[in-house]
Image (cartoon, rainbow, N blue to C red):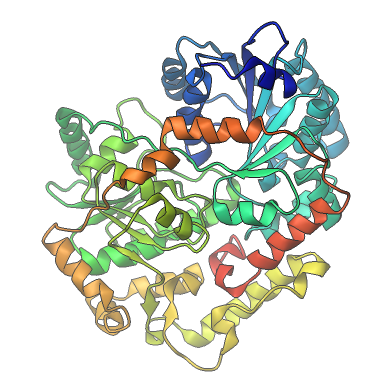
Length: 541
């Protein structure tokens, strides 16, 4: 049913005489495949229909038009609520803008004036995604300004942060008009009582709540029906055609080609546990800064003839299978990321009733435990013997890369940065986590025959023995879907958490030091050694 009228009036959403419907404006830099688009796709229908359709219209404001297939899917899910699109290139990443900061600000201000024309605080909500990643801080500040000016509530939904292993963007942030850490903090965490901060993991909420009105809103996950057997068979045939090999097992990493996905580790695991399997990834490179990583992986794959195919769904032709169909046609999913905000693949594997091999990430493992999930093939790190890569060369390489990365940090942050694992004792070759190597060293490990590297690393990773036996018998364990996950991850739960966060009373505006204090607390945590990975120090590791 509708929210109580007096409650809506108090919050500025409705007039006293009616439970008015709302216009929801969703803002994101782009709508390419990925976790943010998936949250928008799954979550918006529940927001629109959760209270007898209180939302009468949805506007997607983005820097580029989404592909037609996704638009059709989204509009069908939203039916009968109409969807319109506000496509404005100035809303895209700052790095893709042809204009300088001053001209861009004028363009964004004009665009937002058009977007918010004829809106009123009692009939409009704004749901903005990933402002905290600072890919266009001018957009962030102008969006905050116009919402504050018009008394429109802005739900800032944070999936990632610019200060979380993205320090190579600091020069770009300064060019955007935030020359100091304090200026960047004021843009991401504005002193504005109309802003509600939503986070997707409890660890981030814990840092924010002492300083701001912040709420934990976990991403939703649907347990969709299994794909039709005929479509799964078709997807399996398509895979065999792409791989030019009939009957070969396929292990899948459903992700874009990003350094943080740590794809070489997935290949190590596949080669050790199921040597005859092909490892495939679904998405392609989505930004120029990831191109060198993808190019090096592809070149090494061609040289060594590894059973690896990258970006299998790149191009978006209509005849290709969907990701759920490919997942159903595969033997196993892998998630070897060194950094995730929420970790949807964990839940999607359980929802699809498919085996998963996955890293345990410290910021999201407690949430998964709270939801009730148990992942029988999860691990902290994969250790590799030092003889499988050139230790001295890797020490020199990491010294150079870490020094360059450290100098990219704003001066106040440099004293907070801890030392990475290898450089703590650089003169003592010892087993090291595969994830703590540069891509160059990872490829050196992979260049050895799989049976040789497995023989040297088997005792370092005793848990892999039983996984290898399960994989050979095609009996890798599936994580069951816990009953209590419904109260956290269902569409209704998402709408309830989101609505509660967005309609919470504003309370006192944040004080003048709240932004800097929140950012400082985040940075102090993110610069700990456990979050330092050479893959993320440079685009050329």
